[in-house]
Image 1 (cartoon, chains in turn yellow, blue):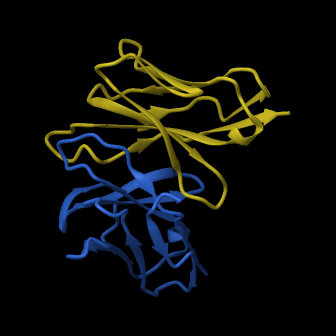
Image 2: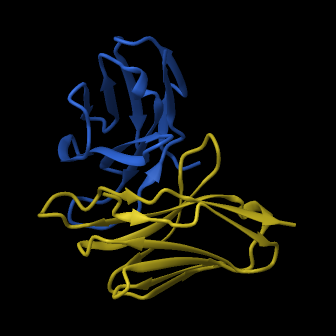
Length: 116
Length: 115
């Protein structure tokens, strides 16, 4: 049962344009969402997060949008740069019967390629 | 550099053996999490420790165990290794307790190969 899904395995965009990465979730107990970026042979690097009480959070070139009714979140990168080429994971956490919020449930990842 | 360190970086061993993976969290972080990334399963949560106490378990096999020591470093012990245990093992740390949401910072991982 995949509770967090990234349906696009890959995305290719031109440098300077917008990259939009999408993520869907099924568990309504999730209330905190994060995006991570991962290069080969390295650990995931935290990018940006959003709590379920918000619908948007912005940090520099990165903006995350949350649509709770659709159980959907997206990461916008504007403008995209070649150095953004990596695998992007969305992750979710929440209160599951009083146990740790800390457990992150990850999507399968989307490979972003930004062409010069 | 996330501030989370993991050793060793690579580990090659044989089936049936036992290994120990080590993680040192970021300074000040009390929570340590272990994740497994295999080719077909993606990143899967294994276990969470907060200040020395186990807080949550994921799909961790009975052959696997972990602990967090008073200096807050953590070890993941994998025993009776099977070929299918070959994966990347990541440790992450955060300031947060079970009642507080906070981002997790990941170490570089240990690549385990079981032959």
